[in-house]
Length: 189
Image 1 (cartoon, rainbow, N blue to C red):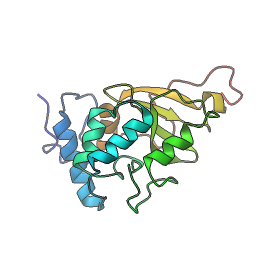
Image 2: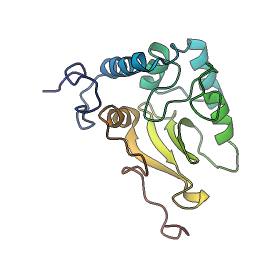
Image 3: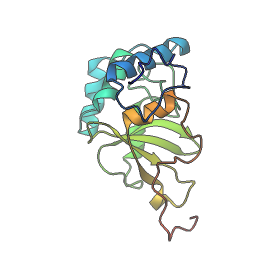
């Protein structure tokens, strides 16, 4: 029997990523409780969501869209998600997600289409979400692990599972345990 987020006290201690019977509504409630305690900006507008979807050329994953529209325009998550618009609260070196996306879509980085920087992890590391996947598959950008060519790697986790790790306090501060290893021929590997 799955526990509801209310029974877990949303204190990041008992929320299990393995318990994927958690509904999107329960995720929304958990993030809303977190946002209320942190004084985060109010929800984004549908126009803000449509603007980033036009820029990226793919729809925002459903759960992520609901968090932005129903809870807050940035600041949620383990490293504070970038706002869709300039809210006055910068959660990275970029004023909004469009600026972050433009920076990452620079041909020098060579990111695949649809990958959007979501959270600035510091030290040039980013958590990215794939707008081409309905469940928002998560990716990691960490040029510190190896060389620039191997900085990008899939985490093999959908957004819901990734957020579950955050809510239960199991998000890694360093390298992700779900990250694919760097190439064997990488100079730093």
